[in-house]
Amino acid sequence: MFLGLFRRSVKVVRKKTAKSVKPKAKKAKIKKVGVKKISARKTAARKPKVTKKTASKTRTKKTVMPEVVGTVTHYFPHVKAGVILVTKGTIAVGDTLQIKGHTTDFKQKVTSMQINNSPVQEAKEKEEVGLLVKSRVRHNDVVYKL
Image (cartoon, rainbow, N blue to C red; front, side, top):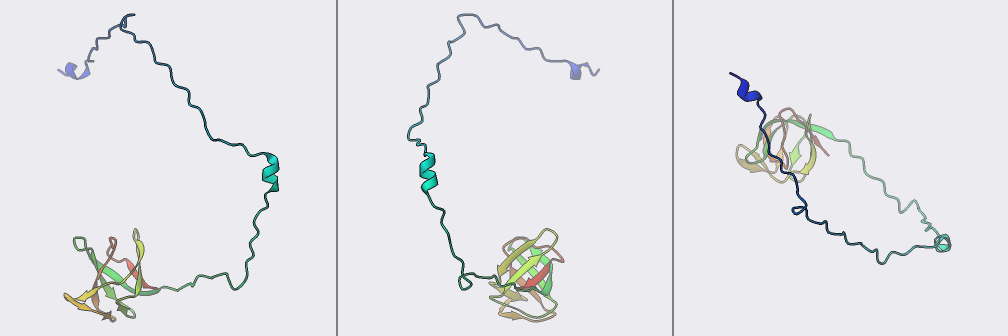
């Protein structure tokens, strides 16, 4: 009953005859052109460049402590907008936010905000705000203000 599953297909193999074998073409040799070797004298004559660092030229990065502003409550993938519940402080257009979660971690500037489909410039505590985001955000991601 199951013999059809275990049968092997038989392939017909033809032997090559002397007439059917073609002679192989010879490979062309590739010549290297324009390669120069530098002698040990020339490399020893070169002096390493010495750079001076002064206190006035060195720059230090500003370390901004992120402040927890809220959490993500919803994400609309078609319009790439996230809903954020502001739990502490305020969010305004132009602020830089960092959204961090289990698989999410990115920074972006706030370009537009809406509350109940009307554009606003600033959101205060205990308000749910819709923000355009550049990447997917998930429920309970933490929002930091930089």
